[in-house]
Image (cartoon, rainbow, N blue to C red; front, side):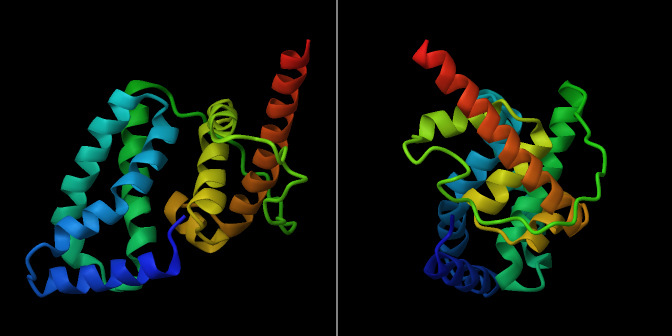
Length: 188
């Protein structure tokens, strides 16, 4: 999740890039390469595919970077571009699982200790996310791990905010069930 200072640095670097300041693009890429790779890696589930697709994403981003109107919106724009590329790649290699629009409109509570075990480590969380459908894990990653708002996730994913809320609700439930089932298997 990007901190406030990283978001400000990102805006500054984008503005510097537009003014042709040397090194601004490299610093911008360096700032976002790990979170972007992590996101793509979780969407595609294999390192080799994720590396190739992430490289393609950066090529496309550099070509279109001057078109970003609001520097503050760069992170959401970057992840939207990444999603488009990852989904396109995924469709070329497999059929993308689609979920029905279920119209859930309830409020989604923050991710807290009641949602998953407080002793959960990063490896268990990554494994749990890999067990979910792509659209569910994507919403969890974008909202809780990358820190995008429901509205920003909706823009990135290309669905209504209510659909994002629904996916978050059901994804949290599914993740909890997957992790509890795994914990029960480990105890036996």
